[in-house]
Image (cartoon, rainbow, N blue to C red; front, side, top):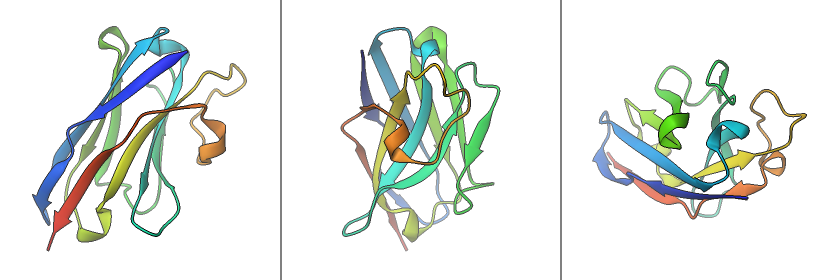
Length: 127
């Protein structure tokens, strides 16, 4: 099993940047495909992006492509979400997720494909 803890959220003005971190403990991070999701009030959980085990492949939602970047440092057991050019509509609780399914090589868009979740960190973008 892996335990995930997000950090780095906060309040930022539109156009600003934040970097979220997801620290993993337990099993080696390199055995997991990682994803980032977000959930705004009264909305469902939305896929933001994901990264393969070695960080070679990434996948982003259309809403964040070109603004957000996912990276990972397996030696530090940490996954990052760099968020630039933030918009008010990016306001949400952000969650990192892990999949240890060996059949899953590339990141997936569905939250059902991830079995481990962090507690979330709030990002608020003011206009």
